[in-house]
Image (cartoon, rainbow, N blue to C red; front, side, top):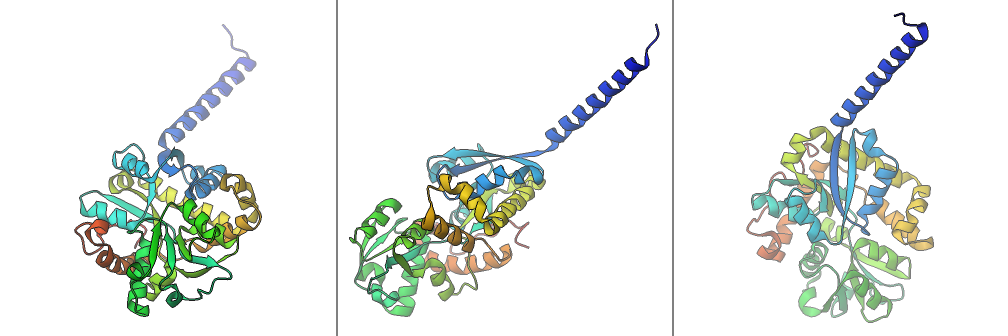
Length: 331
């Protein structure tokens, strides 16, 4: 039986296609995968949307799957149980988990924090003017921003804001609504709620970053970080590094492109002035320092927070646990 030139070429083409397919399969099999748990309507979803839309994960050699959760506690439980690989939480939680035997660690995500907000026409101009006022606070009595402001008023302004003020705790939307209605003299809310208030006739008196700097921090410290297990990072080192690079790429895009924010506007449920202020405050919160610098300042602030918040906040540890910031980025 003879084999024609056409048959030979066909077999060669089939062999080439098979080889390409095999290489593709091997590449897919070797590509890292990571699952991140996030609140569906949280601010982290904006960065993750940009990351996935522009395929920054694929560009850095891995595939990121975003798993949506309804609440922060659910994400924490899922990661500790090994159901997902990455979540967003703060360094106080990470340090406490490490103290209690877990191997979780973090890379900085955002330095954006809450602030004391008042209406533009308010007579409150500075921290001393807050004394004896009715203040709404989000996040509960152990919120980091609230504790830092407490420490500052005691040390530098001679009054205990908890004792000498009427404090009203509540959920972020409720606190903002009460402020808009004039039922509160000032409010401390999460950064994105502060940004929306700012776009609607409010101004800042002091932010948690201002308080942190006054208390000894040399720069802005990330309030939140991307959290994962040391063991996972060791077993998936290139994926962990790739995720850090993909996050940085998404942040760089969001720092430079106004058009990207217009694309995200429906997800953010914001437009006009609100969208602009949210964009600008997000950009201010992009970490600009090395993780080692942030870690050093976080350790300083930890002692202050531990003194005020006590065991309810930090557990038994009086110092931030070693390894709270991922050593591979904190060198």
